[in-house]
Image 1 (cartoon, rainbow, N blue to C red):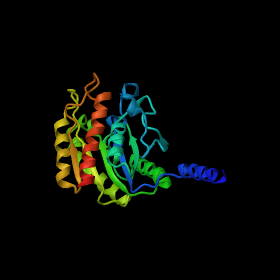
Image 2: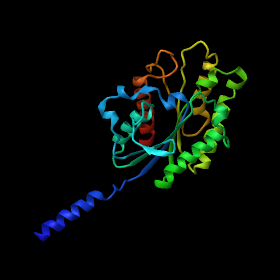
Image 3: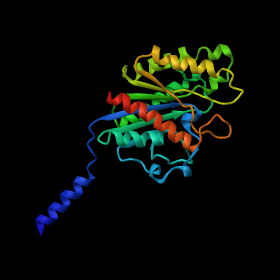
Length: 246
């Protein structure tokens, strides 16, 4: 009887030991409203309302479950696809997004940039890891700015990525950029910003652009709806998984 009791106690203790992951994958997700997300959480399939066991999600300085808020962004579908692709790895997502932000507001040493580094610090204090990838969805505000500001988008984004790689000690980290596509007449500089975004993957090492064309949108024709956010997350995931396996 005592032997069975000891075996039972050992089993309970083993179940309480945290999983030993093969690798930590720290992924930063940042940008403006389409990274923050306006997809309604009640529209998610039930499977997406759960957080995979190998996912840690940090947002607003604290760990959260996925789909914990009324609205969601690309992190939900991205997390599920990457968790399935690397079931033995620990996926750590750090998200910071600011609605209506311009690229110049994200430049190094500014409040948004420093805030992003703090968000990474909150996650890495608990889960030491090197940044594996940086996912970026921003540029709509710049497409609505004057031509002089819009034409500086590419150089400013390059400066942001290069400095972020240096400050996180991850010079080879993957940079994945979601190309903007607002369908509203007020966004006069959309094509200029899109061209500069496309050029990024030629000018920055280990950078790639994903298309957002065809994603479902809200009636404002700017922000992605629930299905659009799911598909955006899946496109980010497809690009990340392909490069991570290459």
